[in-house]
Image (tube, rainbow, N blue to C red; front, side, top):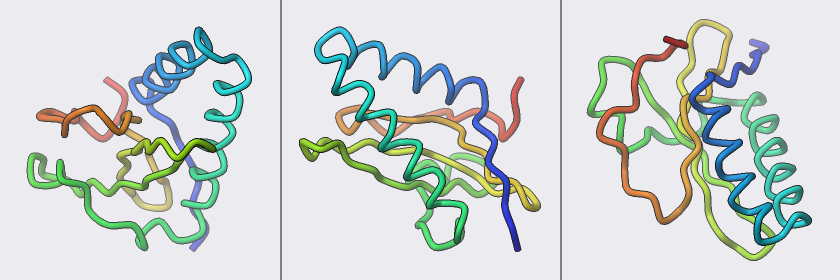
Length: 110
């Protein structure tokens, strides 16, 4: 089955916030981080069921999985996603130091 990718607004806001935070410190690093995220998201589409359930999965009535991607310096980031029909929806993008979410929200844009 071929999947399409949809980044929900709140996930896009997460990406923008992380990008801007890194960009203030290293514009080159921000571009590299964004490329890492985009590459990981594209790889996800080949087999989205291969990634494990996220810790947040137990908090909602739909399935949440996550994938981890790293920067060149080895800093880890995590993207939460769900699969609805043939669409992979990225719900949030989190920095490695951020705690597990208590309310990941609905699987669609509100």
